[in-house]
View: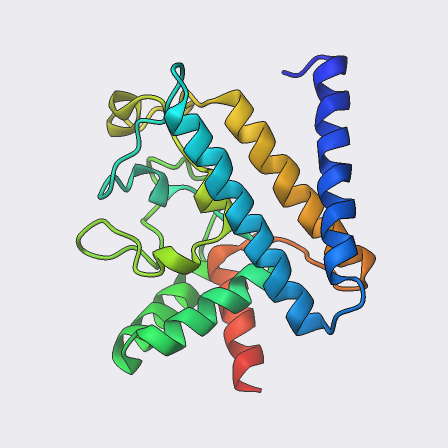
Length: 206
């Protein structure tokens, strides 16, 4: 729970990101504005995560192949779903893409928010080797996700220990970018990953 000073600092960070992104993308066409906004968001998240890894205290315990967080519900914006679909269509086989789409359709129609992450089936993008098959295009929610304890992940604990500064810095980036695009008239409502993927896929085929 944040105190008033921390909330004020967080809101100020959101507004700084919002204004910085807005200066870059306001005069641009929508597609270009989305591309640049994604780049800025993902580069910023990478920097935040790298700083946490290099810190002497509270470094994330995440490792390649640890897919515990890939059972959590993930919220995605339209600009992120658009990039995911583009990546899948470019790098996946037609058969793999179709199988993923079928899995997303099944999940979208039967994805109860009441399920705990220990009960939830894995993400439709997760491979048999427990690695993300669209890692390079993964959304911000996945990029900020982390745990300070592999033991807690393996036990599927409801509350994972996390680095609060990393989370708040990431949320400020995500919120600021989203607001900047909405200032440009490009609404960015979040949806669950399966629903957002299907919507973006249909738009790409239109």
